[in-house]
Structures are given as structure tokens and as C-alpha cells.
Image (cartoon, rainbow, N blue to C red; front, side, top):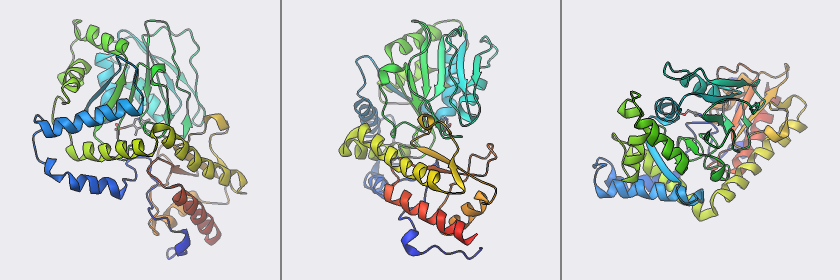
Length: 368
Ligand SMILES: *Cc1c(COP(=O)(O)O)cnc(C)c1O
């Protein structure tokens, strides 16, 4: 098994199937090289500000943002955004859906001493939880795609008139189409479907969200500058960030936004990831030892496919055998602890490579 070798026809052109960091297309790296003169230059000067402006405008176009919505960005990734939201967005109390690691992490960040304890609706891994409807909260938060389990929620509004709907789009953005008007804040980091490196967060914000941020900022709450969304809004309007951003990350993101736009926009990306994930689920359903982990087909993610195996197959062995053939990062989310493979079907990943991967898994199982 240690010297298991895949037949060349089953070797994907690109073996990166991880859920973040994830495959970066060679053309993005070419774009980075072509703009290498921006690296090592001031983010306060025109060339880098134009790059930030292009990324902001490109996202506004991809999401066909309604009037008054703004693209805001800052440093620290989605994890930093959770803390920023606890300081800058939640007025008194938040409500959360927790059906995996990432939804729970935001709920934990919102358990801050200056806020009332959040209302948390929990669901088992592999399901999508739902708000009861009577939660008293000023923000309603949930992940669009729970990357740790491969369960995907519908994007819709919750709560009363004054409440904000705040959606973690980290692993869905750039690969799943949404109506941004159904959210007040749709935030994400660029290392998943946007195929860039980590370290930044982006948020599509409604006028109502920006009002809220202004109101919280003018209250007497202590807010560290780095976690002030008001400062992030002010800087973003100038195509800047409070502190130094990773310029290479912005350039890789820029290339991916342009590529998606040239191919037909988010609808194209959506159809592509749907097609790739359908291949994986159909394969698993037809397979004698495999099955989709998410039992409700409507909740199966089109960007992160999780496949369980029965006791006759050791998924970790398959992962190791494929890793030695250049196919990487198909292990399940580490804390989930299942006999599972987790496969990203992100926009950057070729559907033909997904087909080869499935053939490669078959070959590995046969060789076990
Ligand atoms: C990856 C991921 C995060 C964490 O993003 P970081 O940029 O590493 O902080 C948060 N939420 C979801 C849904 C994710 O997939």
C-alpha cells in the first residue's frame, strides 16, 4: 500500500481538493507575477488603492449589489470578523445557528461580557439547524456553508424589522449564488472559492448594517481600533485598510474575480460547483461502501462534499494513499472524527479533476 501508484489516467491535473487554503489556479499566479511591481509598494498610494478598488467593485458587480450596499474589508480573516462583530455590530444580544465548528465559533465570540448571552440553536453535525422565530436578538447569524460538515443553509432573512441578518459566506462566496438583499452582512475570507490566500475578510453590508455600526461606534462601548467596523467602513471607502494588507492576496483575489466575471459571473460559478458536487454525491450513492454524510439532499453542500465510509473501508488510508500520488487535503474536518473524506468542489477546481479523483478513490479502495 505504501507504494500504491495511480494509473496516469486517474491522476488529476491538479491534486488540490482542500477546503481552505484551497487550489489557486496557475493563471492567478501568472497575474500575480505580471503585477509584481505592486509588491513591496505602499498601500496608501494609488496603484495598491486601485487594486483594492478593483476588488471592491468586482465583488459589487458579481453580487449585483443593490444601491446603498457597500463592500468593506479588513485584516484578520473571518475569525477576526467574529470578534469585530462582537465589538461593533451586536447591540445587545445575538442569535446563532450552530450545526458545526464555524457557526459555533461565532456564537462563542459573541459570548462577550458586554453583551447578553447569545441565543444559540444547535443542530447535529450533518444537519442544518433553524431559528425558532421567537429569539430576542438584534442580529441573526448562521453559516451559509458549514465547512466542517458539508451542510449548506438557505440564505434568508430572520428576526424583526430592526434586526440584522449576518451570514458567514466564507466557504460559499464565489461559488454559490445568493441574493445579497436577503442579508445585511455577508462576510467571507478569500482562501476558499476565491482561491486566494488567507488573512483578509470582506463583507457585503446593507445600509441598515452600516447605520448599526455607526450607532454602536458612537455609544460609550470600548472598541479596539483593529476590531472597529466603523473604522473599517471609513477606510474601505478610501480603498484602504487600517493596517497593512497582504498585496499578493489581493492580487490573487483580483484574478479570480475577473475570471469568474469573464465566464458568466456567479451564476456560472454556481452551476460549475453544483455540477462537480453532483458528481461526488451520485458516485457515493451508487457506491456499496460510501454514502453522503448529509442525509437531507437539500442540505448537501455544493462546495464541500462529505462522504462517509462503512467499516470495511478506512478513509484515512485512502487519503494517505492518494496523498502519496499528489492528491491532497481530502481528510475530514479534524474535530469531526468520522470515517470520512471531505472534498472541495470549489469554483477553481476542474470538474474533470473531480471525476478523476472519484476514479482514484475507487482504485485506492480496490488496492486496500
Ligand atoms: C474557513 C472558514 C472560516 C475561518 O476563516 P479564517 O479566514 O481562517 O478565519 C470561517 N467560517 C467558515 C464557514 C469557514 O469555512
